[in-house]
Every structure is written in structure tokens, then in C-alpha cells.
Length: 249
Length: 249
DNA sequence: CGAGCGATTGATCATAATCAAGCGATGTGG
DNA sequence: CCACATCGCTTGATTATGATCAATCGCTCG
Image 1 (cartoon, protein in one colour):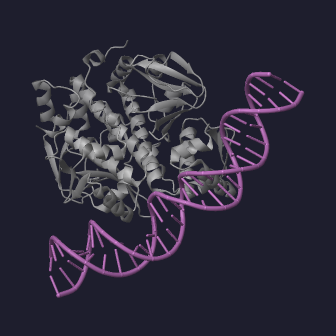
Image 2 (cartoon, chains in turn green, cyan, orange, brown):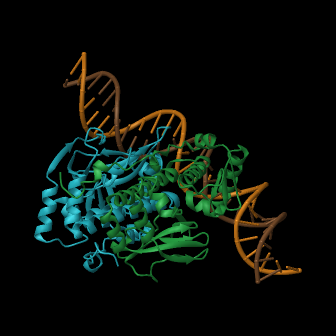
Image 3 (cartoon, chains in turn orange, purple, green, blue):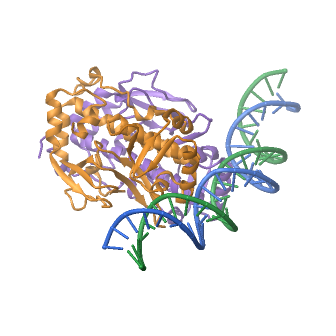
């Protein structure tokens, strides 16, 4: 199944017509090589990208050269929804692997959503999930200590991957170096290394070869104090809330 | 002017008709007292709130009792847009002062946006600004050291307040204790206290009596390494991108 | 074979947390 | 009206988490 459709299907069950509309909308393909910055300058500013294959980091650089990773983009996720209203982008997208993207014009996306309220609702759900993740990252970096922080990140990535069927057995893609991990959770690479050793010693997971393998998910969740409400993986489309969304109360 | 209209007007100039539509949509008023948790349980789940007066914190509590503040909600800002698609809320809203809110049904909001593309664009702009702020908070908490962190927060609050005319001279509302500040930037209250003393010694601002007074904005911005691109205060509605938004390319 | 990158280790340093106590203002009940 | 409790701010002393600096090792790749 098409990755975007697979992602949105977590929230709503789509009719064949809707599924076809989604598949059709995402036919313009762009391939990007590993380590490329995916800026939008070279691209019409009235379009939006979705990731089909690969792994992307949203990140920001500071004047002193340090880097903060803001989010991971997994296949099926939008890269830059909504940015067309903006004057200037405030972050960078970096391909951590070779990636395949779908480009869609803003107008086409608007059209898709106005034709199919269910698709609009699903896109909104995806945006809410993204916001929830951003918020949880603030919590992670602001409150948790190193071990918990990394464990939490691993839980999150694994659960998101598993939800859209991107796992092989107990493992999922995580093409990051220890330095990258540090930039994601606000720790130095050295400390990440030592913290990973602590965690590995507990036999909760294995991390290497660009993959994360979960050995003991409940154990990892306990260490992470994971409460996955914020991923909203159980949210489902409730038509009665949406079918009359074009009329006021 | 109505706070929501004032906020959205940062992005787009509204016709009298559009302005009237906005004013009309936000007529159902709810008053909330200081220190109240604004949950949505007592309220229809198909509605959304906007803050008209007061100051609200979005926050999350951890199992060990620690708290992370995720965002500030200023007059004119939406409190909970989009949550109607969710199964469960993943954070709490707390009124830091007595507040006045406007409630609007999801359907009415959808109607407003479908009638007026400019209003839809402005709402999307507000959402993008919110996301940008969330991202910058991750950077703040993840990368910056204490002095910079607090300075950055102060710059942000002041600039956002100033943009919507919520400043008196050089001062704006900031009804937080030092403990609250700590929970916002991921520092202990003790360390906030000491850091504030450092900053005060530089004569950049004054903070007390629930207000923040800026004495030297350029100086404060320098300390904060503030780059306010992420607030997108210069973004403006470009009709050519939106007027045909209902048709595909 | 040499260069470069990522992982690893050790040693030292620094930022910020924690613990503990005191102070001043405010508010409340006797 | 006073005694007392509470809250927020402040200060000092100590601790700890994590950063920084520096070096080594293994691996891949040109």
C-alpha cells in the first residue's frame, strides 16, 4: 500500500474511491540522496512533500554550530504541510538515507481535502499527532534524565514504525549516529555513548547497522516511563463530527 | 478590536464582512478563574476555545511530579484547535490569571474557514506559528544554557505580545512565578533565581508584579541569540496562492 | 595504504540540581 | 488585632549529571 495511505488509514478506513484519490494525488515522485538538505528554495513554494521511503530529520542549526534535531519524518508522513503560508522556512530537512518523496501542489491537496472530509480529518489527525510529538520532545529534553530520554525516543520511534507496518520482526529503521541521537535528545555524543551502554547492559534493545531492535518492549517502556497517549494511535474517525462540518451549529 | 481578529490581522487584512464574521463567530463567552485547569471534559468535545483575556499555560505532568510547560497562550490565540479529531487530550491547560475564553463549535469554525479562504489561511498561519514556537522551545531547552534560555523566552513573549498590541510601553503580561519559569525552560527554581539575578545585573529587563519590562531589547536579543524568523511575524496573505485553492493544479 | 568517520574510553571540568534554611509579604482564623 | 501558616524569593553548601578534552580503535573507502 502507498505509504501515505497506510499512515492515514491508521485514523480512518477509506473507501476504494478515497484510497484511489489519495494514490492519484501522490504520483509526482522526487528522489533525494542521503545527506542532502531538502530545501524548498529550488522548488515551487506552493507545494508540499510527503515521504514515501527513507528517513528524514527536521533540524535547526545554532550560531555556535550546535544542532538540534526537531523531529523524525517516517514514510507516510508529510514533510512540510502548511508552510505555503509562510514567508520563510525556519528549519531544515535533511535526508538521513536515500529518500523518495511525493510532491503535491498545495491547491491539489486543498482540493483533495475539500472533496473528502474524511481525508481532511485524517490530515488534521496527522498534524495533531505531530504536535503531540513535538510537545513530548519538549518534555523529554526538558525533564528527563539521559537514560530515560534515550529510552523514550526509542519507544516512540519503534511504536510509530510499528503502527504503519515498517518493522521487520522487532526491529525498525533508525539510521542515526550516536552524534545524531545526541542532537535529538540534547546530550553530547560522549554521554549518549555511555548511556547506550547502560541501556544495552539491561538487554532492552540493540542498536546498530542503522536499525533499532527491541528486545524487551515492556521493560523499555518502564525505563522510559512511556505513556503513548500523545501518539494518538487509537484515535478514529467519527463521521458524526465531520460529515456536517461545512454547516454551522 | 476583538483579540482573535487582532491576532489574525497580523497575517491578513480583512474586509469589513470578514471581520464581522470573525466577531460574530466568537460570541459565546466563558469565564475561568485563576489556577483553574481548563479541561474539556465538562464541555462538548466538538468545540474549540480561543483566549480573549488572560494568560494560559499548556502543560504536562510527569509521574514523578515534575511539570513541563509546553506553551503560553496569549489573548487571541486558539487554545485547542484540532483536538476534536483526538480520542483523548495529552496535555492540560491551566489559567494563570482569570481568563475570558470564547467557545466556538468545530462545525462553525469549519464553516467560517470554508466561507472565507483568507480566514482559513490565517488560521493555518497561526498553527504554523505555534509549531514554530514549539520547535524553538525544543531548541531552547535542548541546546541553550540557562542565561540564554531565559533571555530567549523573554524575547519571545515580549515580541508576541507587542505584535498584537498587548504591551504597555515596554512591558507585557507575564504572570509566572520563578518556579513556573523553571518549568517552562527546564531549569530548577533555584537556578532560575540565580540566573535572573545575572540577567538583571545587566539591566536588560525587569521582571516582577506579573509583568515583564524590557529595558534594552537589542541587548536582550543579543544575549538570547534571538532569531525571530520562527515567529513568522512578517508573513502575509498572498491571495494568488489561495484564491484558487479549491481547484487542483 | 592512508584518510576519515563513528564508536569508545579515561580524565577533568562546569553547569545546574538538590538540600536546607531564612526572609518578607500576604492572608486567615482565633 | 495578633499569631500563624503559606507562598514566593533568596542565599549558602554540597552533590551530580552531563559536557568537554583528548586519545585510541576499528572499519570502510578511495
